[in-house]
Image (spheres, rainbow, N blue to C red):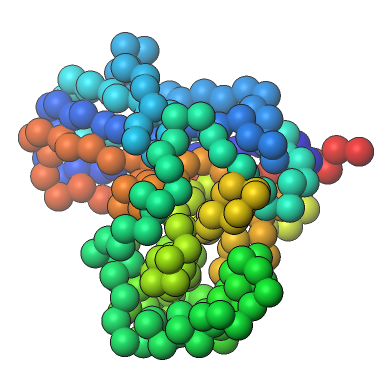
Amino acid sequence: MRIRIKHTTSYHYEQSARYGVQELRLTPAEIASQHIIDWKIDCPGIEGAASYFDSFGNRVHLVNQEFDADELVIRVSGTIETRSADGVVGTLPHEPVPRLFLRQTDLTRPDKAITALARQHEGRHRDQIALYHALMESIRERMNFDTRSTDSSTRATEALAQGHGVCQDFAHIFISACRLLEQPARYVTGYLVMQEGEAEAEAHHAWVEADVAGLGWVGFDPVNGISPDIHYVRLGCGFDAASAAPIRGVRRGAGGDRLTVRVAVHSDTQQ
């Protein structure tokens, strides 16, 4: 499937920003399930940006911006061709050993409820793949998708307690439970074609990759209960939503910013 993406992030400031430094994790990698046909990042300062791989293997652009404006717009556009790989990502260049992703964070640290959720699957499944699919179903039984119930700072424990959340919350609960069971798991950002044709979304989609013996990293989407297929475009990964954030930075002189995000995805099935 050929997927065309247009993604615009706009910061609107009450007071003009004079200087900013942005880390942009907005470049997808070449993996078995996706080939980048073209990809462009457009924002102030991108021409002189330093480019490097971070400790998770993500391509990062470090952008220094000197401007006097009450708005900052970052635009990403490109075309990706996706292929079926049954969710298998394998091992990518520049990435750390899987055991690093046993580390819990403030967003994934478990409580008694997540511990109970994880322990009910301990030693009950024939292999890791079966474990991960069963864990996804357990989360889906306890959680309803609701875009109004949580925000970027919501912890896995808080989301599970209220039984509502977005893709970030489903992913954090899955990651927390996996790490409790000594199964390395990491947070993944990307795009998802909701249906054939064109779809609009407010933000990125997010899912999880878990380590599987003999295969490497394999993707699991606990919101939809499947492994990523040709409708998914993988962007980057990290310990959690904070470390995998596509845009992270600081600005001087800006006061009271308001964020708007618009993602347009158009897909054409390739025969």
